[in-house]
Length: 329
Image 1: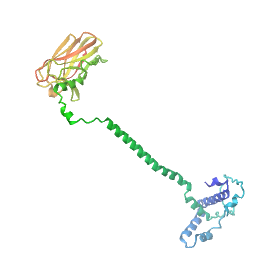
Image 2: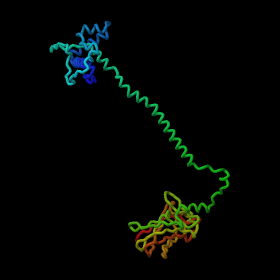
Image 3: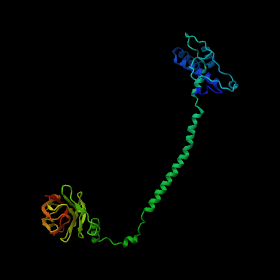
Image 4: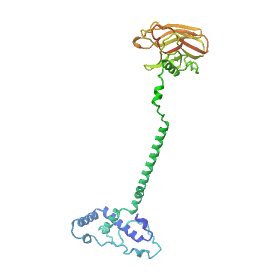
């Protein structure tokens, strides 16, 4: 910091301060001179006499700098001072190797200069503090705009409440309407049916979620984490799947279902084209799903249709169907 003023109108003062700093560093790093300096400071703090009298008794006279700073500007040409000159004791000393270098009272002045805050050090902080109110105001305005936009968008997208008279005039849905709504959730005959294709091992899987439901009471529900068809109450109701077969052949058919004691005794019919196979409904143990197995021949490749009908319904409901599998023989 001080070496920046070695050249310029204050070069004499800077050289003087550099010499004082060099003397202070030498004094504080040598054991003998450090003891003498500590004794001087202790005397200043404990004695009642002025500090200048105590220091004058212990230390030699101070090497004085220029008395008038204006004298150094008489010559407009700045005096170049070598910045690389090694620190050495003040020129007025008469150096004696056997004795420690003298200590000047100006060390106290240098300490005071070091403790004083630089006036320019407050500038960045003061500028930063001036920006804080503006930044807070900007954040408040931005948050207000965002909140207003969210509130307006939610208000515009909110449906208008219906009046009491409208609610009272709307009739409750009938059982047939509920059946139509349940069928609308699954593929029907008018929509494009999903074609079941063979897997790599030749297997065909027919879940009820891909079936076309023909019947007013038939509906797809979820029971015990399984998608099943319930409401099968008439022999006129049936299910259909469209599938594509790469090669005709005989398949082992598995019908996965659940039947209660009241459903036992019914009979189902599974058919593909002109191939048909009947199967009796068995009661499930403890309400668990099980399957019945039989063989069925599919005589042509390409597009085919699988149909499952209820030939007889002895109780109020036929069975609860989960899926059908075709396994290659």
